[in-house]
Length: 423
Ligand SMILES: Cc1cc2nc3c(=O)[nH]c(=O)nc-3n(C[C@H](O)[C@H](O)[C@H](O)COP(=O)(O)O)c2cc1C
Image (cartoon, rainbow, N blue to C red; front, side, top):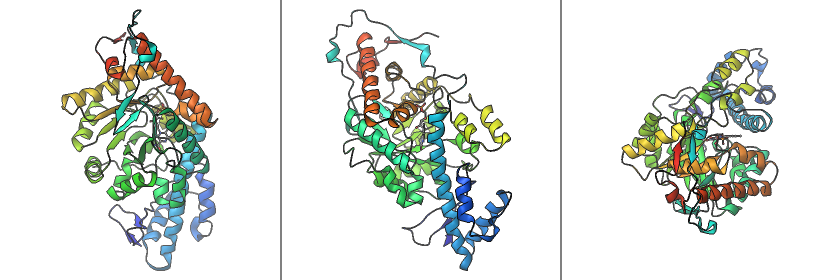
């Protein structure tokens, strides 16, 4: 074992390298962690915090203590897996919407065309993206992986997206990099051979020992067409086990953009990308930005339901309405791209998209692809047919909106004057 630059324990061989940073166990991870650690003498602790430091130290120690690194790794992996399980459960069972903040899309309206001069059958929702043709510019936003339930959800979503000709993002694949036996929970290519598929990792992991190699492995693991790096600073600080070092990350994102031979997309998870951050990312060489703005799933609300201390719950509540509304973030990112003269950078809209008309409004504002997470998750736990039904419905509503706005295709939908601000 050796201690790497980022302060983590890694195996000596490059191929088997794994980060073994011990984070705080999450709620449901806690009993699993106790079980695992019960073979270690000092685990009968009333407080975890001093022991976190202890285990880090012993994990670095030479000789027989180094076997403790294995325990550290198991706890870390379990924490990550059970966090993902918590996220699915909370998103399905609790109200995790923003209390007041909305996407801002309600501030726009299409100008109805009583004479569209179109046959509905002529309306064409197809687009080209990253070398593939989609039936409509709709994305199943990144969600899950790592557990048996997550595997089933991923396969249902992928089958449905393949059948409907849409795109899909994987949930964070960190679990699978650290615990390769879970990689199968992310594999969908056998049921979705032509799907436009995005791999996914947290960008902050680049500050904790990950680099181009891990990013490449994530892409290869799922045979993805591109890599999404998600940026979620607020979520990480609201998680008891979250990663808090976000310093000097842009340079590492830039290295990934240059080191990978597939496009790199950076997305938020529901608080939006500002114009300033969009500029930084475009300068760094990203080929796509998913604004994932505020107004849909609120991750401070999700973490509020996971919080295990009154202080953390209070902090999460304080940020319940934080973030840049999706419409505002989308407009800011598009402006940044246009002002920088980088029209080839793709800008995706997501965060609170709940209808075909929301999709149409984002496209009219200039989005290249529009993502939904929570609505697809809710249908995925029913069946593949339920997801297909939702996707077909969205496409139909989008097509009718285009028809009544007089737009034959997505290009025409973006023409000035079709969508007006009603604020
Ligand atoms: C259960 C669940 C798990 C998620 N996990 C991830 C993830 O691993 N990586 C990521 O980039 N985004 C993740 N997200 C965030 C979504 O991709 C999306 O940005 C966010 O939920 C806002 O979209 P929505 O309002 O349509 O739900 C997750 C969302 C949900 C609902």
